[in-house]
Length: 415
Image (cartoon, rainbow, N blue to C red):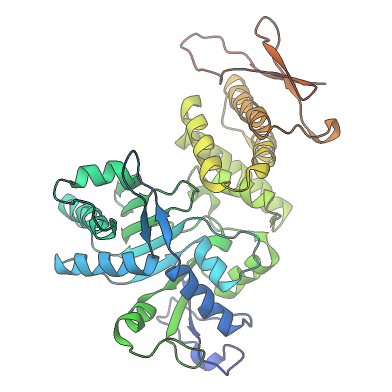
């Protein structure tokens, strides 16, 4: 079920009154949102959509300066010109949570924008991709020759990630535009998506249609007394409960067995940010499910390393000092809650996490005091020590999977 609430940004009413809440269907029910300052809501939403985000080009390609509201307007208009009906456009995830409650302890990195479209066949998927890449030409700086720039060239230059999912329950595609600081503009085109959130605190969506229509049609600029009504929704199912979790920094979810493998890393990220599980029983259940799903989605040690390194790069830009803590939290959760692996596979993953944690410390050029650091060593004959800030750190390679039948623990914890 979904919980939907109309958020009116029309002062001087200081609260969201019950007469503004209208259930959409019998299955969907409205709830009262906690009291929020309306002026700050509309300012935060407008600020996020109006902030210029750099899209960094690879090689000699110039950096594009893109406002989210601009690229949404351009992409939507081009899709409709090509006969694709866009049902709605939504701001999703951490950015929507930031609008509803700024002091949530999460902030936001990615700008996750969802376009509701019909993706009935492969041609529709290709059309969406071609339209987005064609729109990037509009944002190239003046003086850049566009005649010889192809869609393939634009994809190689500006697209960080390109995903297509097409099965019985999910039909969607994702085009993530590159940003060197991890603040990617992610355009998601969704026909159907069974699971739209991981935890209640990232289950919020804000429908942007009324605000975008206001941008196009109103000659009077937005002000405290003149602005549109915006719809906020929690796909967790209960808006009030999800808002309470966000305000209290509580980790809660529904059907944890459905969360994909990356949910384990998000869970550890929330723990590092000061969020706490709703109960010990829920915590143990969530951790077992998420560990199992992580190893189903990333069974190979090489895949696990790539996933961990990409997550640290994308979600801790500007917060490098938190990477070690996140890895040590992950190490603890995997060690405590993994039940689906053979012992040598589990040791290999724990060794990988330990190696990455040590690498993070070395990159930061800061070793904490002995009482605050978990130390690991590698037995001879593999030790190659160098002096580093009066401590010795082994330079090692990531554990590799071989086809031999024997596997052993690469790193051993100091006793």
